[in-house]
Image (tube, rainbow, N blue to C red; front, side):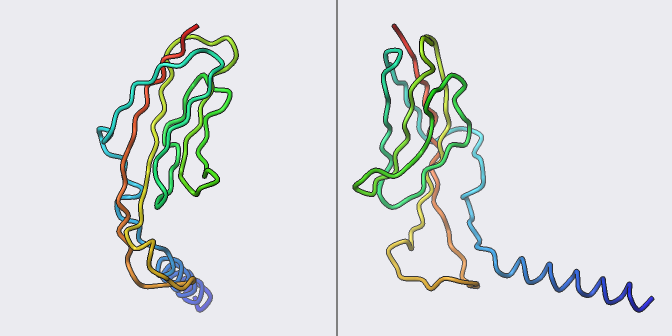
Length: 135
């Protein structure tokens, strides 16, 4: 019986500790029912497409394109968040990708690392890109 109480108390303490050291990223993980921005892009097969988001946020792929050779986010040399796409060789048709651009309004402030009790409100924008790959 003592072991059950000790195990239960240990588990509860671990859960409290884990939850207290996670950042609250309100709005960052929510997926809105409709994207905030739509782009319709026409490229030739084998051509690269680059979408430039901004310098103060994090760009990530929420829904991956289906017919890609390259479909990834990154950071350019000047610090801008970018998305790069090129289709698989010889593919012609429509491809779709959904990106999430999250900006921390307090990114310019200096925060210490580690466990913090402060809440951060991320502002996010969902971008749907329809890529038409032609000859």
